[in-house]
Image 1 (cartoon, protein in one colour):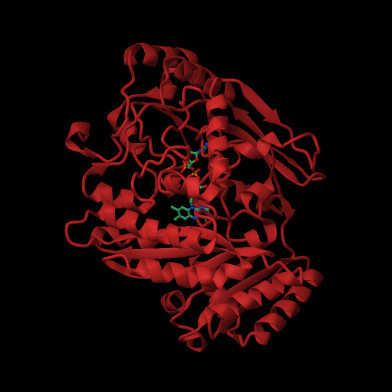
Image 2: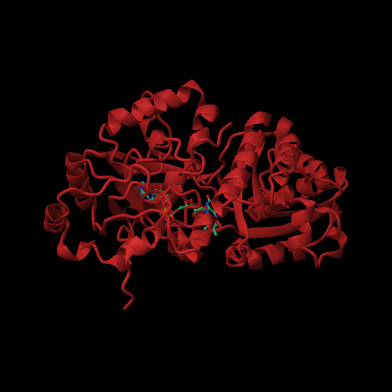
Length: 495
Ligand SMILES: Cc1cc2nc3c(=O)[nH]c(=O)nc-3n(C[C@H](O)[C@H](O)[C@H](O)COP(=O)(O)OP(=O)(O)OC[C@H]3O[C@@H](n4cnc5c(N)ncnc54)[C@H](O)[C@@H]3O)c2cc1C
């Protein structure tokens, strides 16, 4: 048994952290309302909730640093338990952080103000599949892979397959407005959620019944999608499902430039063809992932998966190929797509860097078509100028008739006198500033967390003030996930 002493570790997020007053009394009360076995102050349990999966936290762990330090861990079993915990926290003004699988990568689940963790893992039941409505209702802590496997066994797909499928939950997807690898056909999670149950900061519950469409005033349920655990805790959701695809066709083309590849995809979507998977890799990423494909040397690899009923898939294939050839694409066959399928959940690439003191991360953003190529070149140009930057590459993996989602990867070492965190923030800020200058959105599917909150004012303008007012109405004591979205936690980075 390791004897952990948290004082021996440097705490990264310590500003405004509050200790729980009357902790013994609060502990007793929590045990009384949700049961002894569902509450812990064991140091080993606390350690497990000190970080999320943001890559810089791996650098910190190696250096013996802790990102955030909670004081009490809870594992509620039902919505009433969550309601009771929130009533206590609201009365005592104790920070609460909802925590699902910790796969978030922007610090969303880091308890930067301390407080109580509400772990959602016991909310792991599938409630029902409705075949006529094509929906599944699940508890929010449901693991993604378990859900998809269950749906597949019944002849359906959920259509939402993020790279973190094995390590993320339905509630986490909703909280961060997640996107799966098959999003070009099935949509992002906000297109997939039809109903929800949410517990508010004061412990009250709201149920949004699934409905195909409604015209009953502004749709309040939508406001909780992407709220990152700051407005309420999602306990249950009804999601769209689809019959398992009858046919899958694998297509790949290598293009002379990223502009050609973007054009080919744009023109394909303009024909109202939506391949489920579309991924454009810039020349550097093509060299990294497809070095074994000779025809792709010095080119921009693009992979497509069309799926659904046979007749439509065949037509989608025909149109996709026509558009790729129009833009000088060279047919590379099925092999690159098979390679993608085999490696699509492999996540070791970036996590290999921190042990070598290299700081790396990924940043996803979005843009309309007319600025897409500008955004790419502008981010590559500005982020490569950060002192110590060794790598900045991109792929484009989510597409819409009107625009696309880009995914940048950076890596490097801090310049002289700089910390790893300084370098990390500089690369983040250079990327985000370039995106805003070109007219893009600062986040496509990972959310805000701590990494982006200081850019929210520029992203939203006056709307940010309204967002803060809404938060104050729902959570006047600011107990739910404080320090996220509405507070510029990384100060001084937005010049
Ligand atoms: C290797 C890797 C690959 C990834 N690939 C993708 C990808 O392809 N697409 C994508 O979109 N993301 C991806 N991510 C990011 C991450 O998986 C998502 O953000 C995911 O949606 C988080 O889910 P989680 O259950 O792990 O949530 P957590 O990390 O535990 O929590 C994330 C945030 O949601 C809040 N939260 C969690 N559950 C609830 C709830 N029930 N109610 C209210 N708030 C809640 C937390 O407070 C926190 O703010 C990837 C991450 C990694 C590490």
